Amino acid sequence: MRCRQSRTRVTVTSLAVAVLGCSAGPGGGGDLSRSPATAAASDEEGYAAVPSADPVVPPEPSATAPPAEPGLDDATTGRDLRRVVLHPRVAALLVTEIQGLEALLGATALEAPDRPQLLRRIAADYVELEHAGAPEAVRRKASQRAISTYRKLVDDGRADPRGDEVLYYLGLEYEHAGDAMNARRIFFEVIQKFPSSRYIPHAYLAFGEMFFEEASSDPSKWELARQAYLKVVEFPPRQNDVYGYASYKLALALRNAGDTEHAAIAARHAVAFAAERPDLAGARVIAARAESELGLTAGLPASGPLAPRTLDERAPAAE
View (cartoon, rainbow, N blue to C red):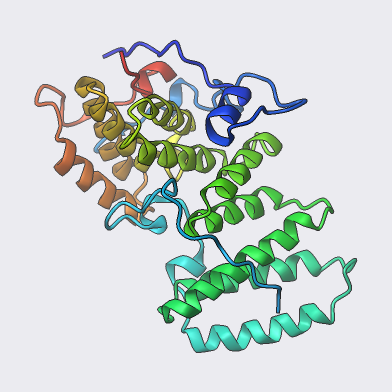
């Protein structure tokens, strides 16, 4: 089944207005409707089914910060697959390690070449502490310190080969803290500064999640959510950990907008992703949810080629 592409095109400027409420500014123009990864998503990319830092106090939770889907945390959706999230150590061990690393940081010169690596390790330890089953007060403080440490890395100014990773995880920490505006700003910065980053689909997914949440009170946001999720699935599933979850949320957005036909197609992509990426345990959870919540069109085959051979077919669009 061939799905017509929407006439709406996402540009840096339109995204800046929708997400940030401002212009992209000088040098911010350019069409984002085709990302650097789109070329990599060739015809062969189709797949078959059955195949002591100063604390930063976060603001009160914002109504625009998207809540996690029940039972779908960052590890399940593919948004954060770091070891510190998947297999955190015990809190007491982490607190001891962080104290030692903070002391080492205090004795490290600002211009020291190993300072960025030390900051990344400290930030990762704070994130790990957030997931280590510590009391709420400890987790909240760990979140504040993670943000503060990532900000030190971003504000350092020196070239960092992992700058895209630092920005993405800073945006994720802002989102978790309920600071939707800073999260939007940082994710947008990832797209602008690192157009070839592996975190580009993750950044677009963050926008989709925010628009999806806002659409519950403003139906005009369904189109923005759909466009953001479509950007995510431009990136080939074999290199895109969030493809399955984005397909599932795209299906929900399409269904909520009244396009049940394309919603069913998107749901099948979420199901097929579990077979394509058996290395991601969360993909099976998402596939089961897509099947139970959205169902599958009876006329579609249970096996055989599923992904179409062109992007507009792979990414279902609203009529």
